[in-house]
Amino acid sequence: MPNSVIIIVGLVVLATLALALLMAKMFRKAGPNEAIIVYGFRGPRVIKGGGAVIFPVVENSRQLSLELMSFDVAPQQDLYTKQGVAVTVEAVAQIKVRSDKESILTAAEQFLTKSPDQREGLIRLVMEGHLRGIIGQLTVEQIVKEPEMVAERMRSTCMDDMSKMGLEVISFTIREVRDKNEYITNMGRPDVARIRRDAEIAAAEAERDTAIRRAIALREAAVAKASADQDRVIAETASLAKQAEAQRDLDIQKAQFTEQSRRQEAQADKAYELQTNVMQQKVIAEQVRVQQVEKQEQVKVQEAEILRHEKELIATILKGSEIERQRIENIAQADKTRIMMEAEGRAAATKLQGEAEANIIFQKGEAEAKAMNVKAEAYQGWTQAAVVDKLITNMADVVRAMAEPLSKVDKITIVSTGNDGATGANKITGEMTKIAAQVPALFEALSGMNIHDLMSNVKAMKPRDDGNSPQA
Image 1: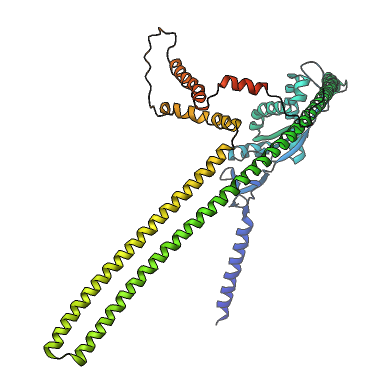
Image 2: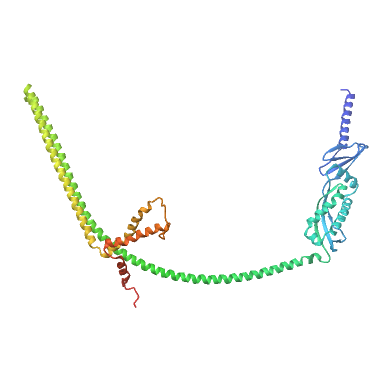
């Protein structure tokens, strides 16, 4: 390869590198927290979050920070409120350049050549002036108790001036409010005194309520103790009465059990005799059935014997017609004998069955007669009191049976003129009362006793002396 070509290629490479270095030096980039202000022959331009080529000699560029600026707003002189009270206010403000291109160009026009301290000094002077005007329109109470309202007024008041400088107020916070005359300190004393007074009154009322409730609790405890003692005495008395009633009921039940066991023993003896008779009747019936079976088996044996003789005659003795005649006669005779024996067997069986049924009926009648005798003996042992108790006990069933037809009535229609003084549903209750009034007459007819005299005798009865009644 000729040397001239190598030289040319080398020069081209060097020129390309030089051009790339020049283009890299001319290209400027803006971060997300800054803006590049380009000015020159093409006029002012704003590069935000991007990049641009800056031609040397004919164009130039400057950086403008878009970050948040935070500084204290604390006037050195006292601020006078609406009431004429001198206060010192310290606040914190956060301000930044607006993000639109017009505001960035306006802020660049105002602050591009100034240092951060100079820029914050200018903004602080504006903020302090507006704060002085706002404090003069408010009272100390409003400033102390409503700091958010002061901050909101501050943001709305500074908005126009900040917009003229391309800025915006992000936040404004009152950090401290104080005064030399202790106005703020004394401002809370009435509330403190009122709160202390309310607390003392509440404590006194609580002590009073506690004493009242303690007295009420002591009274209720005394009443509860007295009531408990009274309930204990009543319970002990009721327990003794229950024990006496239980002992009485136990004695009555013992007597009833003794009487019942005796009756059951008598009934068991009678039932044993009846059961014995029934078993004897079953044995007799079984014997009759066995005899019937024996008769039937005897008839079958006789029939088999006749057949055997017939076969012997046919096989050995009778011949020809003699054998035929003899066979016919024997068959006829056998049939006659069988019929007679069957008739005799049926007659005997019928006779035995009739005798067994008659014996069963006789035994059943005899058992029922004996049961009636036992019941009659038991009734004879009843006293007049038992008969009266039985009748009185069944009087409720008699009244229920007499009133039962009324329970089957689905609907009752009452027609009354009101002449007899009993109208409406009262007529029905009157009729039921008349039905119930007939029961004592029925009792007297059945028992032969006057129920009025009987109740008089019951009232005149003296209690049985069991040794526990008090002595006169």
